Length: 242
Image (cartoon, rainbow, N blue to C red; front, side, top):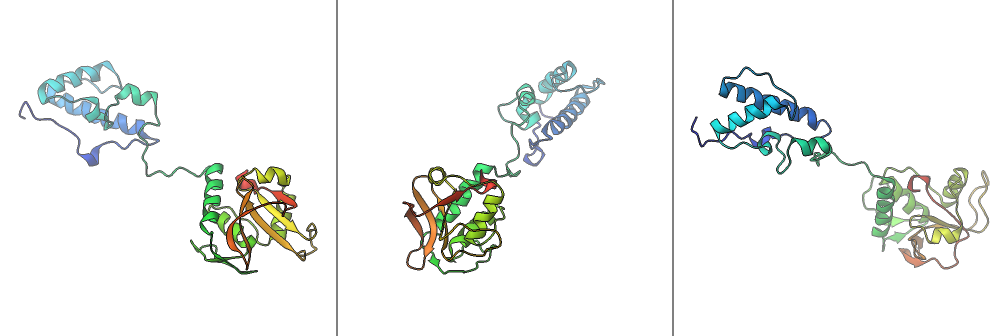
């Protein structure tokens, strides 16, 4: 082999750091050790990361084949074995999607509701919860649909949504809800009661936390951003977002 040639792993062979990255590192180092042993005629057995035998073999291997640093061995530019062992999460594969946190879900719920600004309102309209971008809602359907997009199942019907939150001890004062992004604001002609059916007037909106709402307000307004004012008498928070 020419003295100035370098043995470098092909990109496909470079180690993909993941939760089991240390196992892959050890396997890769063992492979390099075996190659080094063959090149030097040594019969020394492989050692663990940072072991003295490996360091000696690697030095001999570098003399015969040209510079080979821990970047080549580990496939992690700028980081050696010590740094990676000290930080096992380094270089985790970006393909492993991070599960949504509660805050992630709440923010996406709000973003999706806000994206419906300008859509039509039709009372009792049912949307497909699998539709990524409906164009027509009623007040409770907007909330049920946006929640479903972040894998939160929530009932339909503003009065049933209120009763659900009440049963789950998830109600809060209206004043607090007005300062809480994602809280639900309710307005009823009378407080809903289990088994009593829909009040003659029933409405729900989503608080933006700054005194405004995103809501499917009515056929005259459609879906939009509005001042909450003093229009609401009850409030609560979907527990999945709390």
